[in-house]
Length: 298
Ligand SMILES: *Cc1c(COP(=O)(O)O)cnc(C)c1O
Image (cartoon, rainbow, N blue to C red; front, side, top):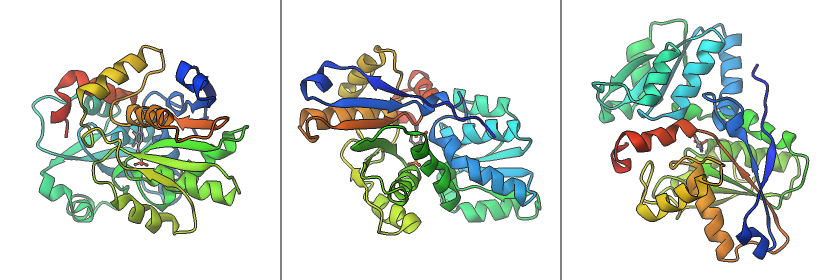
């Protein structure tokens, strides 16, 4: 298994000082350059399960800029699995940087239309129904097996935090951490920043994963236009933040950090609070900004 190197660092900023807050970041981006951040935590027990059930071929799904597919391609290569990625959208003339990296790790691709992409079970049956080695992994590594790996992040913390902030796509990582926090009797408020527009469905999805007894809060208004969308105000803020030397991507971690700054300005936090942000990794996603206009990325 991959050793976890993910230190907690304090982020220095005049605004935090003025509002008497301490802000920290857990550097899950340092776990691995390609099996990055929450993707390693989500895949850990999935890959262990594939191993114990003697499956040698991992199949999963994602958009053409999927951090999950890259993590899977790399982890698969490292742990001796064959990997296939079912990718949403037409086969491109030239692979983008993310899929190129996946291909370096030996991942095979099947490109499918947006329509066909909706029914993942059907696609899996069509292409791999007769492959007795095949192992189904949902888009983004979502599902019950992803939860314990995400919850384990909490065991690496040595201090108490009043708030824990992270970016949410499917909400699986948040679900695992929220469940883990209540099992460990932590009073930390777990707060998710939705990166998709209209992400109210997250409440139901998270409840389906962990039930209603675990507490968390979702912020739905910091999507900046939607998944993989941006706007100039946000990008200018992000590019300025990145010049502090702590690199964030525009799809996930940038939105989370922007939200934190905005909430601090709006006096959302009690003075004296300790806030932990999670760097969920995915930095290769930033290269997508340089490849084509941000709004074309889906
Ligand atoms: C995939 C990803 C997320 C979203 O994780 P979910 O468990 O789907 O909510 C957050 N941040 C980064 C960098 C990611 O790659």
